[in-house]
Length: 206
Image (tube, rainbow, N blue to C red; front, side, top):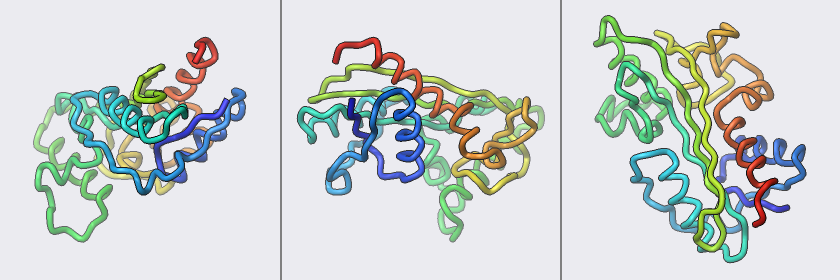
């Protein structure tokens, strides 16, 4: 069965494709995605945003099975922030608005700055990923999963993106940016959610 990913991120595509092939599916990038208008991601939940994207893109690709994901970090001490605004966290708060640093670095600095203002802040957090599969504007399957960890006071590792360098996996003693990509896909939130989606798809008649 052929699935189309509503993402242009080559790393995500490689991960989705590898996992799908072992389960008897094939994943390709959605044709013409770059020219399609991006839906506004203003839902209050990860699943809400994943559904909005899957619906919007599937309407522009009639008959195709299209899936989209939304993911991010939830820090307990910050009441679940950055949450659905993970990718835009620093920009939303105007943190280092004129800094030449890359967005990921600004987001990490913003997160650390907020945690530093809470002397007894819990360092517990989780990465969350929600996936929605749609065809012709109708959501057919949903899957969501997460992985828990602790937030460090300084980044470690270079093989990752977003908040990966701050996210420690206590059982391994490594951050998400320090573990091999294959292992990250096996234990991480995106891999877990995608495997759950494929398991549901195996059972469904779509």
